[in-house]
Amino acid sequence: MSFYTIKALVLRYLYLYTRTPVRIVELIFWPLVHLLVWGYLTRFLQQNVGDDFPHEITFLIGAVILWDILFRAQQGVAIFFLEDVWSRNLLNIFAAPVTNADYLGSTYAVGMMRAGVTSVMLGGLSALLYSFNVFQLSWALIPFVFNLLIFGWALGMISTALIVRWGPAAETLAWAVPFFIQPFAAVYYPVDYLPTALQWVAKLLPCSYVFEGMRDVLKDGVVNWAELGIATGLNVVYLAAAGVLFVRVMNTAREKGLLTKFASQ
Amino acid sequence: MKPPILKVRDLTKKFGNVTSVNGVSLDIADGEILGLLGANGAGKTTVINMVLGIVTPTGGHIEVFGKELMANRIEVLRSTNFCSTYTQLPGNLRVWQNLKVFGQIYRVPDLKARIDEVLEILEISHLKERVSGELSAGEGTRLNLCKALLNRPRLLLLDEPTASLDPDIADKVRKVVKRIRDEEGTTILYTSHNMRDVEEVCDRVVFMHKGKVLFTGTSEEILHHFEEKSLEDVFIRVARSGDIESNRERKEGGS
Ligand SMILES: Nc1ncnc2c1ncn2[C@@H]1O[C@H](COP(=O)(O)OP(=O)(O)O)[C@@H](O)[C@H]1O
Ligand SMILES: [Mg+2]
Image 1: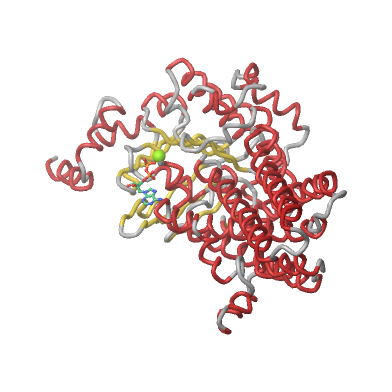
Image 2: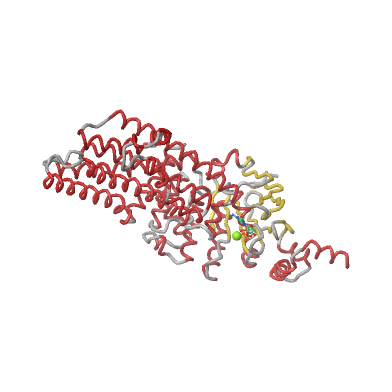
């Protein structure tokens, strides 16, 4: 693994972002829209229903928004990789002195940067827009969102691996990856409501802690940092697993000539 | 005698039950331009991809700079480069941005000056600020060639570099290829199905058909071997005859 090579690959991503404003929109637009809708809707409910409006309603709003953040992170990442495949540039990269570790290192670095940019921006805005009102979730939101973005990154890498391995036929499947885990992720209902066996599945998914944590914050205003820590730990595991899968798929791709197949289409 | 820069032995690649490359052996000497000639589907690109390590051989052995390829892949690739009609640099980056990224990946010293130099060599200095995806096919190929020259490779693999070029630019590219070899001693593997390329640029030719090497030698030796007047005639005959092995046996049997 070479820092210098990783730096060059990251530079390439940065050029892509500055050259393509649409990507910046993707990075900032959706989280921003969600922040505004969530903030104003909560404010509206509180002013009209009073302080004792049902938690379940805010749970649902929060769930919808956080889920969408996860979903968009996964899609954004997958598109990002696939453009490399489709633009026939992946061959240039892998025929250059770039190891799998270099390539993965650069994607992790870019993933962190993306998550960082979005989180800092959300933090700044929620401070600006809601610091003077009753909106409680503003600051606690940031580590939650950061974890979702990282998990989305791992899922995006897994989706890409599926598409590289099984070709365009696997695309619908790959785009649906987040929905395979949705029932177990405790998005709209607490983990306790799942059968015991499925509760274990939920506990293995970093996003379930985020959704549980979101409900805790809304109900009691307390951030469960221990659970957030578990989510972060699991995310590291998922990133590593996605990396291993990616390397294996790349080796299969070399065997079966998959990269060159994409290239000559 | 110096050891060959590229040594390929019994190289085979099967994709499922299709055998794309079937027992290919070839050597390229230091500073030599070797033409890999053959019809579409002969297996030329697959050979190049295996030498770059982006396709894993089913069997056989590849040595570059006297080193086994897969065990020394990264080290070998640092002094190798390639240009192919099948790949493009990211279309939404500017020409200089693409060259800067690849220059850094290949650790090119004094990169700024080298970028200007390669743009000059291929006569596209005026395109430096342009967006790569907006270049014409010919300009794009020349940008790819710029990338391929950036690191002053010892071994340069060119996969049909003149395929999308008009005759004028194709002629310029051929001259650049020869100049690079003459001035820098670069060893070059050059695939083509264009007779002009082979006659003008290559010192020696490996003639491939259906994954196998039919003949290796200079253009004159090929003409003599196949008893034809032009390489074009040899090419057409090989492409149409289907199974050249029996064809030659028939000829030999008849004489
Ligand atoms: N990735 C691949 N998967 C399956 N078949 C392939 C793949 N790449 C090449 N082939 C097959 O191998 C043969 C040789 O192809 P190629 O090396 O591209 O020939 P050339 O470059 O001489 O035109 C062709 O029949 C082609 O269809
Ligand atoms: Mg080819």
